[in-house]
Amino acid sequence: MTIKDIARESGFAVSTVSRALNNHPDVSEETKRKIQAVIEAHRFVPNQNARQLKQTATNSIAILVKGISNMLFAPVLEQMQVLIEKAGYTAQVCYLDEEDDEVIQAQQLIRESKPLGLLFLGGNLQNFVEGFGQISLPSVLVSTAADRLNFSYLSSVSTDDTAAASRAVEYLIQMGHRNIGVIGGNRLDTNSISYLRYLGCRQTFERYGILFPEERRYQKARFSYGEGYHAMERLLQSSPEITAVFAMSDVMAIGACRYLLDRGIRIPQDISVMGFDGIELARYYNPKLATIEQSKSKMAERGVQILIDCIENQSEAVHELADFCLREGESVRRVGAAFPACGTAEGE
Image 1: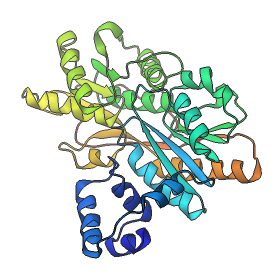
Image 2 (image 1 turned 120 degrees about the vertical axis):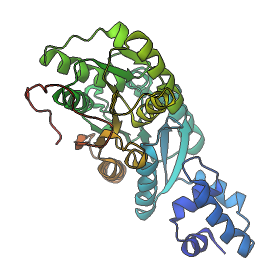
Image 3 (image 1 turned 120 degrees about the horizontal axis):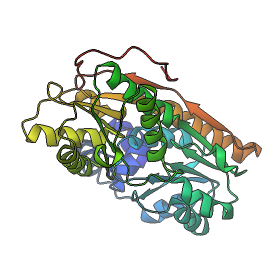
């Protein structure tokens, strides 16, 4: 019995079975149990030598996933693996912590595994500024724009983070909110996603003539449930007057919601919460989370297509923006008198 037979009998993709065998964190426990049942029924034993050869095969494409708990990347990664396999290549996945240097990790992967190309799922542009010049391998940065770096081997597919964050804050303002808090990333240097999203927030507050005292109403956090939870606690301590919160990721937003509910603060009756990413859990959370939904399928598809084109045809680097849209939920309510529209952000 082969891994393809297991995939066929269990009803999951080959890539899903492979990740389950490797105990990857983005495979649910239920899925692992179903796959394990098939394995035990047929007494399948994974071939460690074959697995190692597959991981280091010369037709491999390496995917570096930035942020172990980043739920936005799970469906993107799954689709990428399927597309890579359909194109006749092998996907090699490397999971990194949010604070790891993905470019240094990529350099190590190149030395050890010799992949044909690199896909970066998330990344800090400062790491690319400092180290990507040593890489001469076709690469695509997915979810972060790299057009201003001007590396001939680095393409990108991303969301317009500034416009998307602007649309999120504008929605809260148009729903009548004036006192708005923001939960964002720890880093606000000009090469970070957090800065681009923060810039969209500030521009929108200024456009509507709303004061935003950053020292009280911006709370830094890692992109995780726990960090969102504690950032919400600090935000209420520094700005108890807020009526709405924009979190720069759905994971942060859900953590913030949990803190509010634990304190008996109703959502959205007392405080409205807006997220960013459009992860699946946001649709099923109670209350259903209002969020900015990124085009995960488009980023996965174009990321792989661009990379393979660069590998096979030596094509020049390209940089594309994927669409986003505002997905209304149950976590934001209208209060008082709404502001009139003051320009429209792109993406809807």
